[in-house]
Length: 253
Image 1 (cartoon, one colour):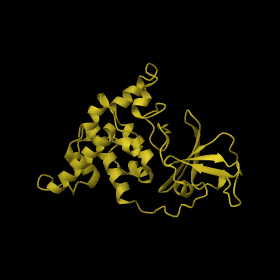
Image 2 (cartoon, one colour):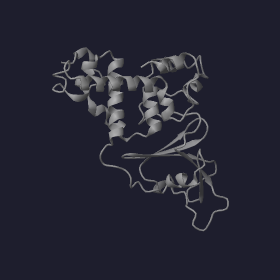
Image 3 (cartoon, helix red, strand yellow):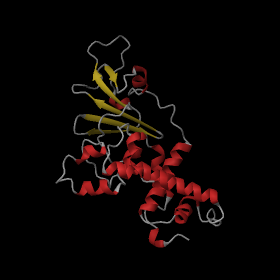
Image 4 (tube, one colour):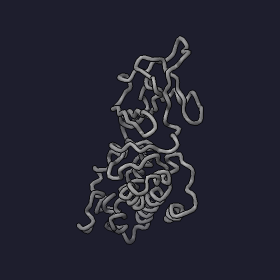
C-alpha cells in the first residue's frame, strides 16, 4: 500500500489529464516550474530581477500556475510561434485575420515584449505573436523562426484542426506518467509507491520479482528529473545550459 503520507496531489491520475493536450512549450513549463531552484528564484524575484534569463525566460512566471493558466515568455521565440503582420501588399487570395474564426479557447496575453495569442483545442495548440497595428479583417502575413513559409501557413489562424486526435498518443501518455512520477519523487515517494500510483496496486504485487516494471518506473523517474534539470530547454528550443550550477543539475539522473 502507498504510505498515506505520500498521498499528495501526484497520486490521482485524473489531475494530470490536462497534460495529454499540451504542446512542447507547455510541457517545457511543466518541467521547469517543478525545479526547486526555480521556485526559490521566484520567491526571491524582487532582489534578482534578471534571473529569468538563466531559465530561458524574459520574465519569471509563477510556478504555482500549471500550463493551463501560466503564460511564460520564453527567450527567444519558439519555432512553433507564428508572427502575424499586416500585409502591406496582399495578393488577391490573401488570408484575412479573423480573430473570432480562430478555433479553440483563445487567450490574449502581453508577454513583456508584445501581444501574444494562444488558441487551444483538444490535442492542439496554436500560438501567435500579433504585430502592432494588426486589426480584425486585415490581410495578414506570416513569419516564424526558421523561415519556412509553408509551416507558418499551416499554423495560420484559419487552419483546420483536422489532426486533433480523440485518443491520447503514446508520447502524450509518456509525458503524463513522467510528470506524475516526478511529482511523486519530489514528495519523497519510493519507486514502488510511484509504480502503485501510476499502474495500480495489482501491478506492483510482484514488485520485487518484476524487473520490467521496476525498470519502467525507474526510467520515468530519471526522465522526469532530467527534463526538470535542464532537459526542458530542448522542448522550448533553447540553447543548452552553460556550465555552472544549472549545468550540474542537468547532468543528474
